Image 1 (tube, rainbow, N blue to C red):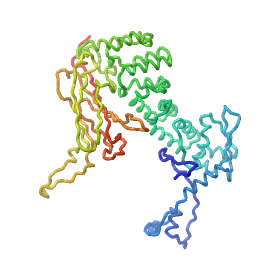
Image 2 (image 1 turned 135 degrees about the horizontal axis):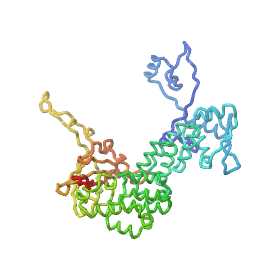
Image 3 (image 1 turned 60 degrees about the vertical axis):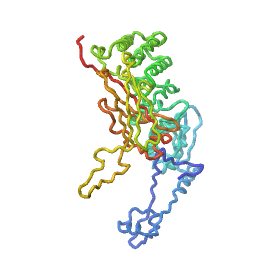
Image 4 (image 1 turned 90 degrees about the horizontal axis):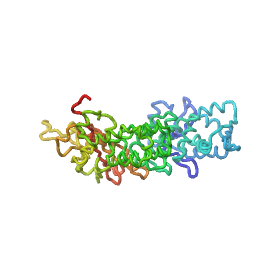
Length: 500
């Protein structure tokens, strides 16, 4: 429930209600507790038989005045009625202290730090930086009502307050808020800042959530203001990943060049960053242009000269011949999740719960220029209610011709991707398949789910395993359509090894 004009308890933030301790009289041996009174008073210590009598009483009812109680607690804080403690909040930027007339019992119930601070004194001076001091009134209000509303830029300072004063429910609530609002749009961006904060406080779950969001939606981040705030450590972590979703490796190089020009790191750092680019995934014509026009590449050319030379060799020779002399089973020759048309295709399935669908598309055989002109046709089959063998109808001899009933909900979504042909050109090439599922979050279409197929498989076992495509409100659907992007990643491997 909410109180107009006062504190609101937001379910989305996941904050628990304020724990209250109520003194309850113990019924005497001759006391009688009518059913409606027992439910209203909430006596949990009634005998089992008496509880059963109350539960079966048709006149039982619950009288709930929690809204009034919250309002009274708010008035305690607002008016300072019955205050027995004073908090003075000071910041280094101001000589004036903000004063809160509070109640020791309520603060101690929520925070062991306040319980200790107020144990032998009624006036406490707290020193807070400006970003947390401005939220201190919200923070104290949470201690009284168990709920608070926050905005994206307030998440970190509110989490800092909750951590400093050991208000664990609020701390968990803010962390959950951050995990569920990664997709929210903000003018300066926030995910990078949240990642750095998660590393600082050691929150591994929040750190991984931010890192995965950045990897799967990197193109959106590259063009935003927060790209310049990416730390060296975060940039190197991202560049190591093969699941980055972006248009092309050239797009990544351009963004890295911009980052290096803006941050001007020391030479060794710049060299590590530049050596993490997968140059064989960039076409020779584009590599020539980079050598001629990129000031960053010119400045650090000696550090990446060997990689550029290897990339040109990769494009000039037959992949099978190249693989005889160089190790192609390393990240340098493994494509990322590129959205360019030569690597895959988008597929929007309207009303996906209706029936089976199929489509086909073409990709280049491989990233090498030697294979750029060769095409592979792929057939894709989508079934919204495919049944495994264990759930398919079987005939029974006990009842002539009878079959076991099968419900629609027993089926699960299935996606099968197969090449439409075989060719000698496939020798030395295996294909990894990745399926991205776009969802709408906070008004933006972003990648939230990614499924990778094993090289030797035509489908992934857990594809949309938890998706309810029957519901129009499903988070997997956008305007009742399933938005997929299928990516084919050719991977070269050696057939014959030649001694150098």
